[in-house]
Length: 319
Image: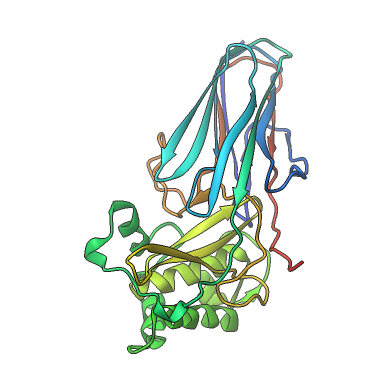
């Protein structure tokens, strides 16, 4: 039988995600109802022939300033190994399964306890200032640079950012001007990932487009900003300094009519950032994807993989 090599990439965290699956059957069950407090993630793989060298990677909740995480339980098939890779604060799980026999099913589940802080506006937003660019560390400096789908140096983006500039405004007021512009000029509409420039040109997009445009405008205006990814949704946050010099990331909900700096979002944070360097990929990635590859697969039918949680587009709703 001719040796076959199958590789699948299934995108979860972008609200307008697409899936490319040479694996054939891909099932996407409903996400765990545990919510914050308990979060489950993993996958099930069924093979129709002998499989050697199965490797799966996927993002998992990590500790952030506004979230504390503990892995409380794990389920791995016999012989499998698990490790976690740090991608500038974002945690990527890697599972290696050395071999599977024809007809085998491998189930991997990770169970987390998540303590997620609510998104509330700062008490004295007018006192927040933009950080000194010379004092930013390596991980913070990249949040002033363009990235995949965040074309902050495109002439269309910089022109708008300059037109909205308020020389005497606080950092909060300047960021709110970018926020207002996005809400006034981009109509919410589900669709594939297009990026900041497309959102500006077309005037429509979902949470991804509204977020990338806000982030791009902030960066063009020298305010560090990044994307925050939760299951089925994303939103931006921008970096400020408090009176005592402490870093204060301010989260912003781009969908709905929530007040600037507030959101009912409670889902676990899976990753922060929008320009990831991932092993095995030559190009930077907009977000950390779910990926599964088999080095050596022999079978009359392709394997099937089921990821948990599943893709979706779910803007938060006020309670």
